[in-house]
Image (cartoon, each protein chain N blue to C red):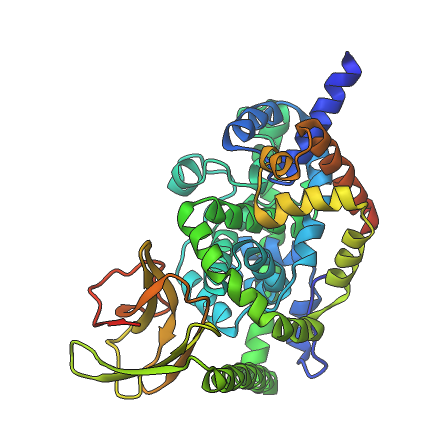
Length: 279
Length: 197
């Protein structure tokens, strides 16, 4: 009996670590987890196993992502470790993943209290030293030749990334031009600018030329949308004066749309389209 | 650990890159932007890779990856070093966020829409993969390959497709209890396979 119960606990810990529970199962399990230190340790160990699948999925992100992330966090305030009043932790994220996975919830007994009461102090102290060191390092880098080298290195990275992107795009355009079902359309935006589309459903490729588009308003850009019966799917940004290559299955896609969105794009259109072209 | 290094890095930059993800996360919690950037460089291939594997659509994946990094920046202080390494912690956040997204109807439609491209892009991705493969990813892939087929199948369906254990059982046509056992044994084996002490 006891053995069976243990094995059930271990099964549940594994399913939780793999994030393979339904919402209700997860909620039940987290209640258990909050008061069971041994179970929390099991979960932590099994999470290391689950993370192996994450490492195995490693893939180089697009260069744009880093710029977007750094832009997004600039001036964004940080939250303290345990802040139950924080709207983010309370409302938007009922299960803040690893927080609940690795640490008992605030309802737990002495362990949690100890963590809250004593740990932030040494950590903050360590942090201040680290911050001071980091600040000093940055100062040296900014004042000396180091700064220039960093800048040049970054520029080199960016150039390499741009080159890769350009090569990929050229390859896509070549495939597009060779597609047997290539079609081209000249469409006009509501402002009267011409946008040229070339697309092939068979190869799932479309080039959109924004060469005549005026510059988008400050902090904004043109976002492309593939539109079908069930709505609009983001298809990347189109810079004024440039050509964008959209890759993706065009099955069920009936129209291409363009809207003006905040730079970096929106998951759903937030303004009226300046162009909707039937394909 | 998951680090990319260039020989031409300046010493200052290398010092940041040499720091462990745990140190970078702790410094990030103190508002250290340089540490956060180094952390991004170190773990973004994993965060983005998890999202991309689950959501397929590169733009959705970027979107989720950005959400994860914003969360890391805002909530870095929640990371508790005494409770394990930083990478599994970050991987769990990335997986949660990607699965949250894929379980919403919109994303699964998107996923279907984009399934085609993945096939189309296969050869290109292979080349890119070769260029970025590093010790950890390679070791992880090997660990995954050495799992017994039944365990790998159950775990991969759950992790990479965001299925619950019930859905995995349904998909495989095996009893739920069997899936639970496979997941548990598989995760233990994976952890040991990576030589985690």
